[in-house]
Image: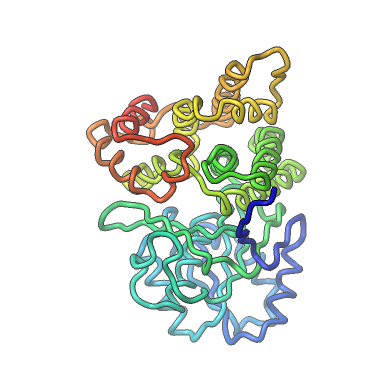
Length: 384
């Protein structure tokens, strides 16, 4: 308890039904020239962006929209967004969407103040200057990019997802309004929910975990276990959506301050090579990587089983740890996640390249058990 830690959190977080109105008041109070809205075309077409801008109509001349963000945002997306930011003399960024617009907006913010090329910022705390101020409206209960010091951009030339861990990208205002998450497509709800579970599980077992992150991660695991099926089965269930909004928000704070592990490293390769939805890649790989990790901290996996509703009172630690993998796999199956990476287009001939790149991924350092090249290839093989 006497350890020294550095905790990164947004200066202001707004969480709960209807908080979007509070954000608009915050933005109106800003003395900014022009706001760049970063989002994607689907959210724009569905009217989600309009739900926000309607509240800003008396400031219609004070914002411009960039909606060309791809599901796995690319270097080109970032450079194009920055061009619009500079052409319109913007000095504030408003991100609307899931992890892709959030990550792209954070990258634009860092790029705007630091210059160079977005590829220059891969790694840990590389930038020198704080990002352009950002207000981040999250519309999916998954990535938690709105509260973390992480963002991920795809290098389309190398087909590699670059992980940036950077205290300077932390947003000024994070918003999680579950009313904006209602009636999202079932596959999206399932994938983002399992992404949040992966964040919580990896944060709990990572080498960098500590007492604060442990409590946050376990509570997030409990909330997801209680609510994800309901959110998937009934998209208009505000209580389930609210629990998922809190769960991903809490899990994001945990992993942003203690790290992740090899699930993310391995998933990033599927994302970069095959353009796999990130949450789906995480969900498919989660039980396989954690089976590999089981021997490193079985007592923690036993606690995960308890948090997910398993009665472990008559089990040994090892039995309870195995039960955690079973209940994670069952939840994934219940919400319709594919059973293996073969269904995601993975090819065995790519495994060696994927293993090599995964071992170089910044998340690998947080894994509770050292991963060799042979281990990485075997994990991909087991996940087929």
